[in-house]
Length: 450
Image (cartoon, rainbow, N blue to C red; front, side, top):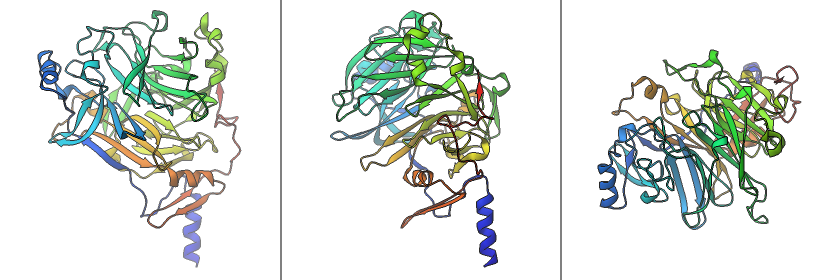
């Protein structure tokens, strides 16, 4: 009796989640030693060889996106940006065919779409991340950059996933970016008129400019884009030295990834331990930023801080924010019901070796209506230091259903919550009695104005 009492007491006082031994694991769906590029025809293969664009060891997968299509079935997409030459195509579908180094990719929409040497700006030059909307659309933001050469202006492409054809193209005006200095890497899309009642004509796309430290907003109704800047989008010099799996590297990236709860836009630089937010109503107001990209600086807020830096993050329908910290390596959830502090990070069991650097993260709803967390891990610390070993598994696409976590989150009113099913169980213990939070997820002593 007393032993049970003390176990319960320890659970209630433990800062992070403790999950039972029979808990869900992060599932490895695909893994590569190095990327494997496939081709529909011998002519396509020969074209890549002739243009010196088939050097698989140069490829690094950055993002993952999933389309649970009612007719086409499940399709998993990944991106391999052209950090250098040797990449035959930059947006791909992962196939079920596997070779020695891993699953075979196929170009999307097809090989003819990919601008292998920068000669045609009507094609796709280099893509870091994509977004898939509830309107069966893929939003593709093409940087136009190969290596350190700006071959084409950045562009936004809308691909109809029903037909795999281009439905809209928007080329960004030179006033929105600076050649090479800008790098558009992370789009998210918000549809204001989703199906079944809406027509999907009111879409806003938010894009992170990682190297010129800004945010770009595209409005489909206006077919126009504008730029927003704020000091919170810059890297923190004190957070530019990163350690992952005992390897150190310097990466001074600014605003790196975006998430939204429908009211606020959340963002963080890679070189930072802070999370920031700004009301969507502010950045959606084009006229405010037409004359001054740094307008309304005080609308931007510091939400709080993490235990260490992270790369990608994603938000589910309950506004839980998921991310993987660098040091220590851990998959974490922050609930907006609690202050954004390290002690309120809920750790989700995951083998650190599988998630050493998660560069892409999405929440997708499967056919059963269950939200899933999808991740791309790529061991960037080894890529940065030149220590990648192609005899080892280096790249992975991962999946983790979220319904059990969301059930805990939805009933998160006490320190210890237990969730169980016939084959899986979860228990969570919180660390803070302060459950009253604003919708920004920050408290009066943890929020900071610009």
